[in-house]
Every structure is written in structure tokens, then in C-alpha cells.
Image 1: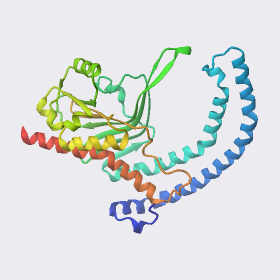
Image 2: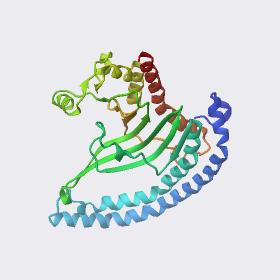
Image 3: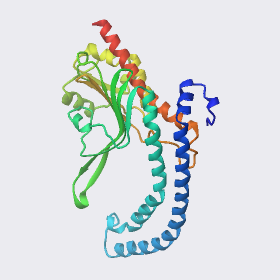
Image 4: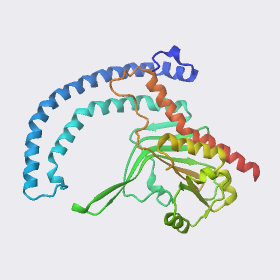
Length: 326
């Protein structure tokens, strides 16, 4: 863990850490206050749980004896009680994390170009429902929204969770159809046709995709890549540049870093839409027990942003290669 500015070999990182030192010092005061509040709530919650659990447990037992099904929410009062209590106890952790992100992420974003950060903002994914890679959904949650320009390229991305709710009452089901980071990158309108990259499918699902997409399977030059992804296009020449070895390298690295070979991408109407599934939370500071002035937290958050933005560099290379051949 890097604690001292003098230990930072990267001058940009050192400059950022020095610039944000006043904000980090202020956050350290907030962290101490929230840490005390967390300890207090833990002390209060312990006797509440000792009294409440036997009561809720008895109620659940009587509900089950009365003929309720074991999977009925009414017979899970103990779980609801403990969950609510834990949510209250852990609130200071979330409050500290929110304060840290609101003070630090906008500053980091500015160092990477004309990027802005909104904790409560969101990528308007509803406008992308006609996409061939966005799964069917009717509920969404968004956080950590970045937008603006990076190296002259317009980009926006956000952590997004998409769910599909079906049925009602006892038959109500909620399925998570996507959870991860969604990117929307603007490219030259007169360059790209329509190319779709999806995780590899086999058998019926592969045949179904070919029939429903209305696109042809792309002829790629990387057998290894074709083992991981299926690529469809309406322009074979474009597809070979869009899924250029440098782009393949970037896609593969991103998918391995996050959640294996499940990344999806789509070039259409002068934009690249990228769905990067990930089970982890991103752009989060270190826990409340780590000092806010610990420079490693700041630098780790910056490097995570730099990592996800490398896709723009590879896209620019693909555009240059394509234009050179036109």
C-alpha cells in the first residue's frame, strides 16, 4: 500500500495525490465520524437482535404450523428483521463511500480528459432498446455515471443492473439479465455499418442468432477469438477492421479482468455499445477501516478508470486502419 507521495513513481499520480490532499484530509474527518457511528449502531443492534430474533422466529414457526408454505415471504419475518437491522447498522459505511466518491471521482475524471462524474446520473439505456445485444428488461438500476470526452472521443459509461420482472403475486419473478458496466462510444458516422459481437453460442442458439439478427457471420482471422465470440455483420470488410487484432486484444483483456468471455459489443449508427458483465462493484473506495488519506485508494480508483478507457485507444486504431484502406 502506497502511503507517501515520494513513493509514487508516476508523476501524474503524484500530482493528483498532492492536489487532492485537502479533500482527503476532510474525508478522513468524515471517516472517523462515520466509524464512531458504525460502532455505536453495532452496540445498539446487538440487544435488539437478541430480543427480536426469538420473537420473529416464534412468529415464523407459528405461520409454518398454520399451513403457510415455507417459501412464502410471510414466513420469513426473521430474515426481513435481520436484513433491515443490518442495513441500518451498515448505513455509515455507505455514507462514507458516497462522500468519498462525490469528492474524489469528479477530480480523477477531469485528469483523464473532459470527463464528468455523476453519482446519481445514468446512461439513458432506454434509447438503446432497439440494440441487438441489450437483453429484454423492464427494471434498471444505475450508478457511477461518467460522460464527456476522452482523447477527443465522446464517451459515456455507467454501472447498470437490468432486470426482467414477470408474473404477479405468488408467481412474481425477477431475473437479473445484465449486471456490469455499459459503455456508449461515439465514432465516425460515415465509417461503420452494423457489426455485432456476442459470447460464443452453439447448436440451436447459434442458428437462432443467425436467423434473427439479419446479419451474416463475419469471417475473422483469429480462430482463438472465434472460440470465445460470435461476430455478425453487414459488411465483411469493415468487420475485419472493427474486430482487428488490437481490438481483440483489448476485448479479451477486459473480459478476463471482469467476468470471463461474456462481453458483448455492437457497432451501429456511428457508435460502439459495449456491455461488460461483472459481479464486482466498481469505482469504490477502500473500506471505512482504511484511512482516507491512504494514497493507494486514490491511485487504484484512477487506474481502474484508465483500464476501462483503453477500449477507446484500440477503437481509434481500428478507425485509422480502416480509413487508410478506403
